[in-house]
Image 1 (cartoon, rainbow, N blue to C red):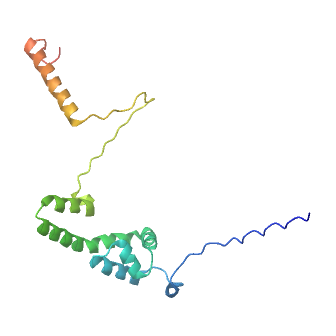
Image 2: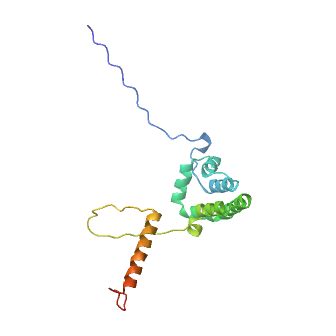
Image 3: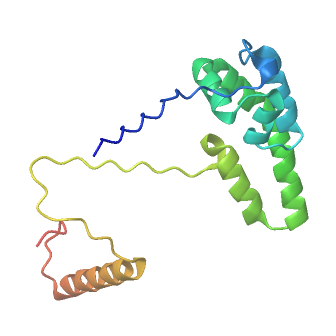
Length: 163
């Protein structure tokens, strides 16, 4: 019986970036930055604003990565627009929490509460840290205060507060 020929392997095609024909050879630049700011000022999201320039959001973020001063300029120029939107939100909602939430998200360096917790240790960690609910912590504080009161009442402390 004659052998059947093996099927030919399918050709492998390389993926090519898809770009609008009008943008061939065009890179995101200053004019596109102004279009981006205009779109953002009119309420567009960053994705919608990027589309208005003819580029993807990723291209815009990559450009900001290469031009950090432009990213700072964007923040500076958009701040009055965002503050006006937040003010409108505060007036419409009549609820300070919505206003505070927006300020914290839009301007975290100025309005968000930040806490830094640093934990240093040496050696092996033999157990995991267990998180306690606030009610448990309050119970522990109350119990410690009761023990302090008992010690003080019994007179077992010397003049320096030590036992």
